Amino acid sequence: QVQLVESGGGLVQPGGSLRVSCTASGSIASISDMAWYRQAPGKERELVAAITSGGSTGYVDSVKGRFTISIDNAKNTMVLQMNSLKPEDTAVYYCNARIRESGVRSFLAYWGQGTQVTVSS
Image (cartoon, rainbow, N blue to C red; front, side):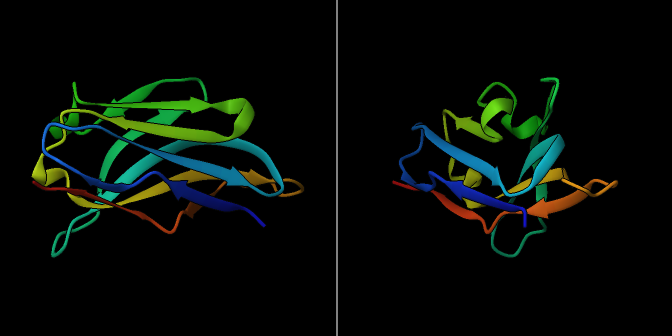
């Protein structure tokens, strides 16, 4: 069974940095792409950053130049480095990945449990 486990959230002051990671485990045959979403209280979940297995990346405008997404294919791990954090970055951050399990023909979307990021003085 495939699982996504996030780690690295926490509390940081405005202007600070945090690094959140997501590791996929289980009977994984292939991962096509991975992404970070976030959901702030009272708001819809939004796509923050995405990366393909080939390394192509994309970011929502509000985080461009501050956040960097990367992937270690050998470890099935994705990292989001967040710099110059702002209070409006406060949210639960969720890992998402399209994964094909061993013995399965189709890619399915999986979600992690979420990790809280709070930016506050």
